[in-house]
Image 1 (cartoon, rainbow, N blue to C red):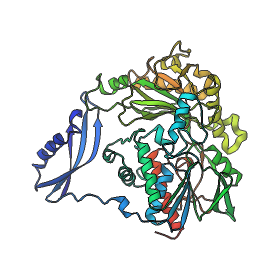
Image 2 (tube, rainbow, N blue to C red; image 1 turned 180 degrees about the horizontal axis):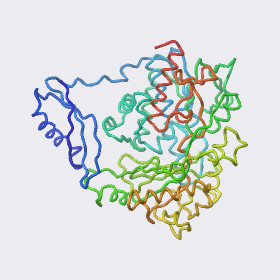
Image 3 (tube, one colour; image 1 turned 60 degrees about the horizontal axis):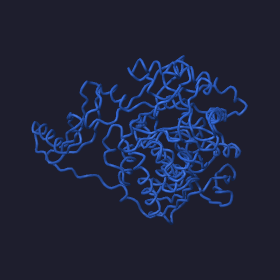
Image 4 (cartoon, rainbow, N blue to C red; image 1 turned 120 degrees about the horizontal axis):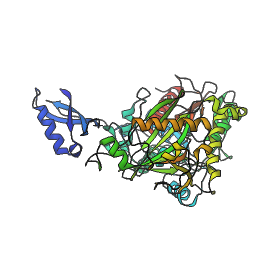
Length: 520
């Protein structure tokens, strides 16, 4: 018999195996049956009281042993001689689509404009230290996609979109900590995720798939309303019955290519704003009512949202114990994002704080049609760059000065390596965005006492929350509703938002491709 129980432990005991065992045995003694084994299935922090504690959901195995779960990779077979499927993009949507295709008996052929995850590091260092942006290899482009070096968080609310547990188990089988299977807000860390990504690459190659880096999609081969193949780097043609397009939310050139080829696109809601960086110790003291935080407590996080004049203002991609990083994908723009390492031990906490963009904001760009949102994004990113000195130094303002409307005489210490320049965001941000951000952070200051402080920096700009463009597809076949054989996937297609949701979308699309091939 299997019975589920819950135990509560203080932070310093929540990862102590002996303490967990003792607590489990005490509860199991009250049950009928002999405890043969137990398994932790969920761990979450409850910080609502003065003394935070962890809730641990445990499965008790009474009068029967825990048999374990089958290894997913054991089900894979060689697909080197199987029908081929082209995948554009080696991010989570592309890589998990490839894994699913292998499991289903199809051969994935992946092309990515960027470099492999190890070689990519040099280009990230060049952005940070030399202000050099490689348009094909940066924080957004390259093996593993945008999440590899600028996120690492695995939490998703997309529970109806696919098998979250399967996606997490595949990550564990490729080297991620098994903690991600039980933590309420799982996180690998941007220092550990690159090796996991490299291991996934080796699995795809081991079972007969192909992966090609420095391989930019430059054209599509279309015959009678059907995608027959792709052109890579303007010279190499590859043909396949189906093409999965998983290029990420910042591949603007791909949207323009699709438009030139007559493939229908749609405008999509998105948001834009800034990234706000606090001392982590301050966030800890606010959330835990203690400083320093107790042993065993993770770096505290927050999630805030409100409505200002009919628009949502919300925190986004909060990185406790994290870093702010430059994520421009072309010279002449300033874009920032956040990341956390596995230990989350940076002295800073940062979060995107953004406002929903509406049609009225896009009016000056109406002549660009479906690309008005992209042009709006670009205009803000270029304004941030033009304010500076020609490098990746980012405009910034103390949070209290942001609200009071004055340029900061000096700025707080920051995790942002290229450095900050004191600026007036009222002059740099679109008026309706600035006004709502200003009012929104005031609301946040009332909701979270201590949040609105001069010790926080506002850094611009957080503009790549998602793509302003969607590549429409049929909800049942996952195929583009006007182009046979084209399967849009992931964030770039407008159907995901984060590592796990993109991974699940890739799996779903791969399943649809298998049906298109007459399998499954």
